[in-house]
Amino acid sequence: MATIKIKQVRSRIGCPANQKKVLDALGLRKIGRVVEHQASPTILGMVDKVKHLVSVEK
Image 1: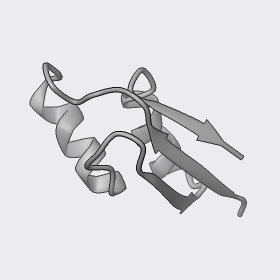
Image 2: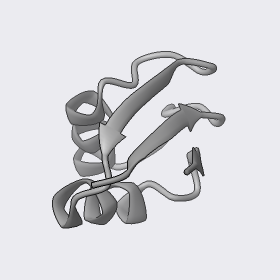
Image 3: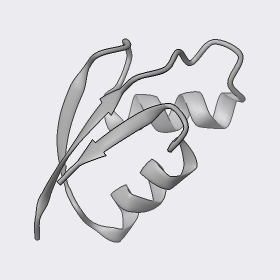
Image 4: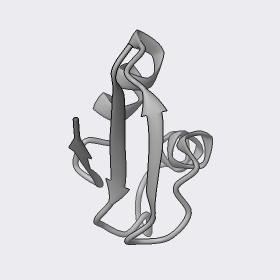
């Protein structure tokens, strides 16, 4: 599987609690933090839930 880089670009302030939990599960706690994950369907689904808060590189 391919690896993707996920970067948090917007603040989590004002977001619903479920979106904050998704960010925590991805390992994103601050703006500007970058994490790498395998491009599995689970991770891609999580990214889709918070796509307005993150940017993704392949």
